View 1 (cartoon, rainbow, N blue to C red):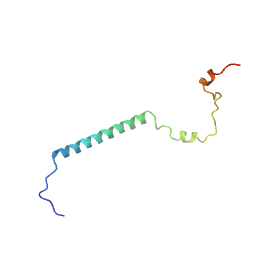
View 2: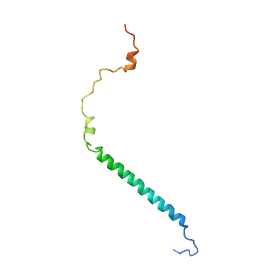
View 3: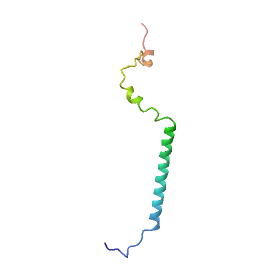
View 4: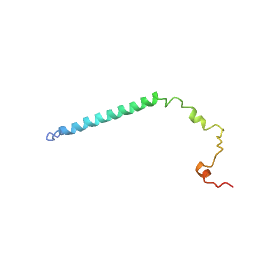
Length: 78
């Protein structure tokens, strides 16, 4: 592979863009790390087994009032 001796080096502004992109990606990574630590300290990952087993139980929650209250208030009394 031949080296082009007459090629000009990249302008210094091109290197400034790389520095800005690297700093922005590091800042974003720190934000995501902070959000993850916040979620762990808040107990987000404490119980990972129960939610997946809850759907397998046969206990059906019976709600006695299936008619919304807005419809009940508009009924005429006999």
